[in-house]
Length: 245
Picture 1: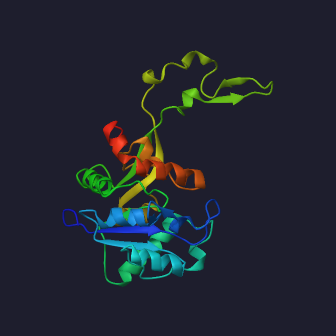
Picture 2: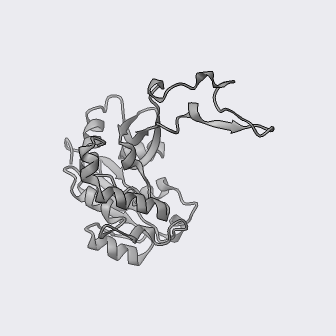
Picture 3: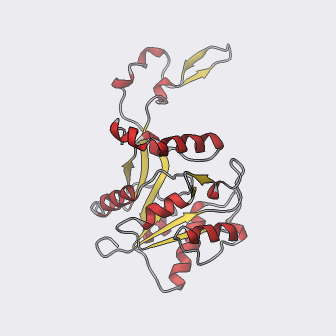
């Protein structure tokens, strides 16, 4: 709870996965992938309840062992490739309302973002709660560097490159001279629950950024991502010494 507002964390983890089969429960440094966001939410100063929404009983059992609640199994129609995240959140929030519980904030953590820490959750909640006059939600963003649009090119009909932005390459300068630009990444999403249900999105004109370093923005969607994240977790000490946090 933060300033009298209770916080519900929801972690969606359906059974089907095409890019990396069984990815939600694949081992990552001795813990199932979805166990990392569960741990982060459980260790938060402010999160009151951690629910995993799944359609799969095996995932449900593993989630419970990791300390999350699985008070229901998600219906099949909400576990399809085309099922939307907001529909999954709606379903979970509706369940808690039937229990007679109303949470002030809804926190969404994806199993595919295992590098999010409890400190990230707490800082993001504090930033949102202290800026409620201008904002109703906060989402993770990360700075674009080597993939800045000014470095992007198209290939024309002759097979030659041309700038994606502008008519020639005169606008392409040094990386240090570029204006800061950020991309939406998936480490965390938090919103006022009522506003989330009204807007049906975390993204709108009252959304704050929570800036995370590039290494924390990696999402595990395929085996290569898993290898990257495992290497990062095994070298956190070096990353901290390098000042990359």
